Length: 401
Image (cartoon, rainbow, N blue to C red; front, side, top):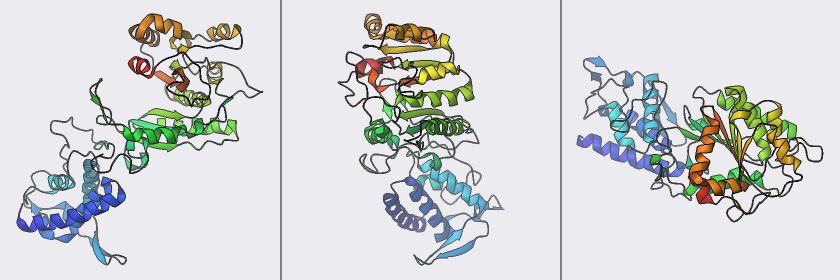
């Protein structure tokens, strides 16, 4: 790199890193660097490429920032594309801001590719579809410690910070359907806080969960704690909007008491048709009503069955145990079509047998997975609203999952 360019870049990078620390996000670093690189010195960019004018250097107007007493360029549409690409590529945390911008704009003062051609952030990586951009992963723990930064799930970007998403983590802070111990309304925020410690690479599955799919935090649904009917409708509408995004993301919903399963199933049935329902829980959750209320944490799957939201021949309960109100409870549940693996069966079959039975039951149907935290023994989840002793350990559940 010529000395003049190196001097300017060093200065620009110092400013960019300062702003990146303030923002806790690489977007400001990339944007500041690209804008400064563009406006500081015309010698940094080639005026022509193969005898043709560089479209990045289209005529611009200079605006002045009165607060900082600095000038910057009002950029051309071509340059905006470069800026957007640089931001997204920088956020993959696989290339520095400097490397990204110089890969896009120049190579030792000479443009090798077309001005707006993107270089893959990973050598040999699969070429992205034109409509998709580089995947934005969690904030780098070597840049911002895991106890700091924005409190999104696993420190992932928010939905409004990306141009597409494959997986959306959605909070449903609601527990007005709880009949015993409340508090699940704080579940989404507690899960997000606990997720700060997550590292992206899964050593057993040998996969980087955030590398090959765009995962985002989609925020929380606004649940009315005083109006059950309104909350059910709000959840259906909110989830349906997410499912209608062009990328058709998968939803990971974090509750919240189990009454939220009914509107979630309803939204997914509208999008995909009846699904195979695999329900991990200590309880059946197919009761009819509590004190006249038909939407509670113990009733979602009876409501879903009444509206044919899942496939009875491909659905099952896993982890059922503990006392019930009457011997009729199991018989009534069986009429809905569910297969059941209670804890006695799980102990006899072992993990491999449980997995095989679930796969055989579900087949190739689209699957909706519902996990009530009380499927775990209270030793592992003592704060659950309706604890039942004598069930899955965290290790056994993870092996099944």
